[in-house]
Image 1 (tube, helix red, strand yellow):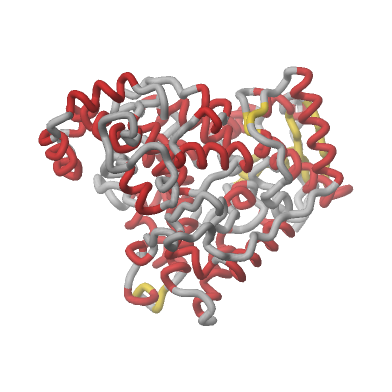
Image 2: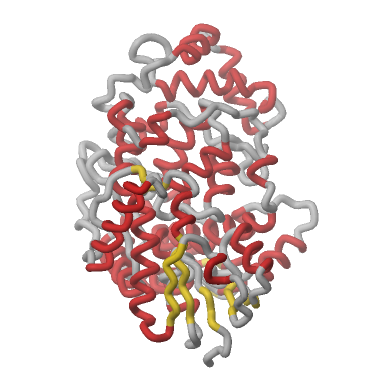
Length: 490
């Protein structure tokens, strides 16, 4: 049914799921791109997706290219919105009296999450419990009351290191979108805005690698299902220098733009399992990332409140982000794992979840970077970075800054984990087995220095008892801590 009101759609609402057939409005506000430095690939993708959608909608859309939203919104009383995806956007639309419809674009509604959370009383809002409740309610990967395959979680089967001596996983190259005139126009505008000083852009302006339309997102899903789904499970945590995509779907950005319905993605992948074309461990692992983690992070963004980032600094982390992070200057980084991850970010505005958690996040945790600054950096430097997706991922999961609301212990690890799960350590000038001396691995030594710094806070965490006992047995503890305090090359 059409609507008498004009629907204002935001940059996270650009697909068919947010279109009920009535008149539409898209506002491209340049001020959004000038708030903080942003990765050029992200700015390009956002602008390209909005302009492609405006072109698709044709006469049905008002498309405004302005400096601020207020220029278009002031004095309008004919607008409606599907509840937008950030605290600031929600405040803006309510302040202007715009009619608000319930949010969309997730497997579960905000009301369903509120009911689930409310029924738990004082119990922790654990991901695993939420994920099970979603599957029970939706029937995804269920056989009656029982989970498909007799287990809820196949994580144990999905932790393979990369194949030995492999340069890549050996999978076909992903399907890449073909750039259009709209992309050329976006590139010219970004060049002009940067020259004028109204935006600060970081990173490369390579060819666009992420879907900007619903049709491209559907093609991206087809390609993942045909080429990489089978290998996704076993190798989802693996890292290789010569293979930046590995077996990942590259769907997070188009999903966060609203170009493809996450339930549609899950149903397609589950159908592959039922047709005998994909292993259950891969299908379950992929489903858990979307119906489990993605929905969970979305709901916790609202549940934990707008002040969650600023009130969360349990480990007293206040160090500023290093210049090489802010400029994505991989050439100044000597350790292969960080060099490769930052270089991939520079080139693509993307890294997969283990690079984010166990390389970037682990490093930042060890060095006490300010968690809010780090979360903002993740929002700005990743093509799939949004204000709702990063606080729980970065401040909670990665930095343990909330003291255990999201994760029961810090995700800190030495170089041994990176050595096991990647080929990064082979040619590195640092040795993951060494914690003291010129070739001491910054991650291995940094791990012990981190435990030394945070021991007073973590002493009461039973999951940290074993690592902290190891710290107390370390004969060269003081020397390692002193070395890391003085470290200049990493």
